[in-house]
Image (cartoon, rainbow, N blue to C red):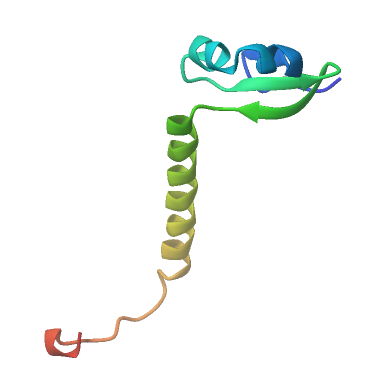
Length: 81
């Protein structure tokens, strides 16, 4: 059985009928889109998606910072910049 990672699930048919009502009803939460009772996609509001992308970018930057913790600094003067 497939896990549904959202509290709200709707069929593709219901999504086609009134997508705005589904997004509004989700109140910022993810919505699982079902096709023949199987999850085919998740839909999130733009604001939620943008926050997810920011969090992933931050995570990538943390990994870069961790990888560079052992590096030695190079002195640079302001005139060199």
